[in-house]
Length: 332
Image (cartoon, rainbow, N blue to C red):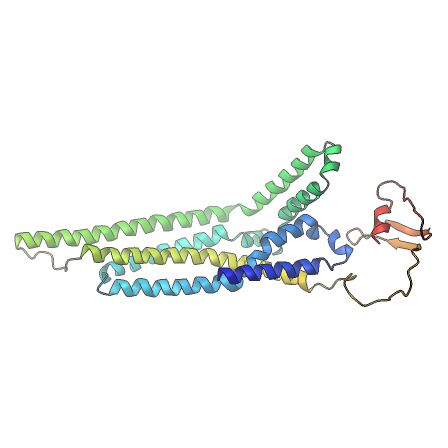
């Protein structure tokens, strides 16, 4: 399962990167598609998809195998069925507390949706990731303007907002459920030990005094521990599957985002063979009455009737204030 999951993650990352490299310029102008956001998506979100197809099946097989093994060994001559019954009757309500608590405290995606997120990465997470990517890429500019502290304040504010988003009453309720479940599990373990040694003590006393005052058959100490450790192993499997269920939920949301990016059709595909092919290229450049605005700011025109002629074999310098369209016209 680990090998297949690793291969799946690698193929999805390669496919996603190939699709991203074929997108038009306007796609990367959106905050959710910045360099930092896309890098974080490829690094963390894509790997969650394997939980949908791998971890669920693996966890189900482990859980079923552990259950049948624990019950089978406990009711056989190697175990003690009376101890198994006490475990099953006492552990059931506390298992519910443990599973509910782990689901509540671990399901970050559900908490995001409850606070108004749209199932994608939260705004705070995107902002922090995009900010880091932009600052690292332009660290010389940041240092030249002595803007390190200001950038750090923006990053801290974004992280603090994300922390407020993912914490709340759900965390406290989930923690309380897990505390009750774990305390109850330890208490039931003590009850089983008390019952087993009580039966052993009374049978030993009856054996030495000749008074058959304990009608309950004695329990062998070795057989007593078999169902105890078997059930503990089954509880560990349940806990692991609860975590897998959380990851599977996040994996389904990540898969939705992943295929939305993969299936998006680029408005300008640079790798497409379609379009007009020039028989001869002279090297002359002419820009004629270009009007352009970025998709994220359609009301702000960067180019208003921009025209330019550059003869072949010559050099031309574009000079102007920031925002006048120098980089935009070169990119176009």
